[in-house]
Length: 382
View 1 (cartoon, rainbow, N blue to C red):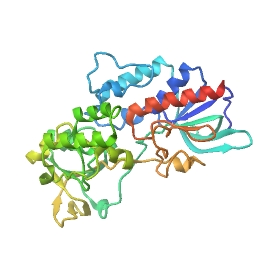
View 2 (cartoon, helix red, strand yellow):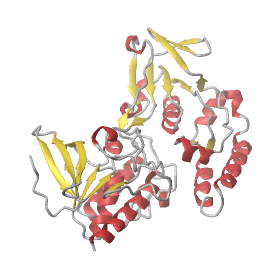
View 3 (tube, helix red, strand yellow):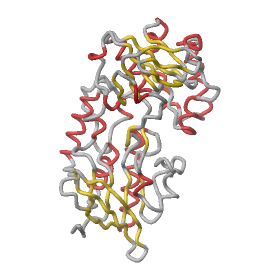
View 4 (cartoon, rainbow, N blue to C red):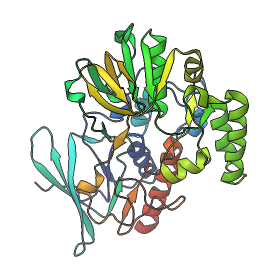
């Protein structure tokens, strides 16, 4: 079914913070557009799939969306619920109205028309709708499709197995033996939450990881404006050694490469500590090596040791399905659906194709990308 949307020059795919930021920037420039969102609400990862204790790790001034500040009475590190209130106000202020329940199945550039043909399935009617636009913005977010790796024997595990998107808080796990798989920031914070709720908590840490405090992470972000990445990384490693000491005796090895070099090159974020490190030092959280197999409720690890567990929480991140529906994106996105070009030109592709928030630069990157995209589109419409 072809949709009558002749006035919309732009289609945005995704109504998370990246899509909302792009919409607001286009609105301020009076550029008509449509947002297609597969879920039934905006910012679904925050509204439906985020754990209760989630807070920003960066100060609020680095996390604002374009054209609207956080309220002055918000704390420096904004909690999830207040961020959702901010997004509600943001959507209302800019009269953003996504088309919900639209799952994009294909987007192809028509050389003859000079437009993108976007096919999206309406979850309500089941019909496939066709949209035409001159500009297409991919704003589907880094956290798109939950990923759980294959683990031998996990299907026979008798306890609870969930992805981090299904975890809210540790209340139901009090007294239980819980294994957290994945040592990124979500894994480390969920392990802390479990320990705080009385769970006997273990976390798998396979690879070396940098440990930074919130203060260090925010200092680094400010310093990168004035100093080289190597200089900033060297300072962060020095500060981490002074504050945390040698964490290798607890199972946390420090990488040989710098924290922000690794973030830029591999997409591996440093661990921003909000209390987990002390729980690890005290023994309340046990650090374990890579998982080998599961037999019943017993998990065997690469070091040959085995431990029984009542629940497993996979904090193993996300994959992106963009490559399944977006054709001819080679210049803009890699196979994993992340920006292919390096900062600061990662947001612009060819033939009117753009991406927002796919460069592993968080909300700060979303805001910057959205403004760049809107300004570039406006320049082509003049």
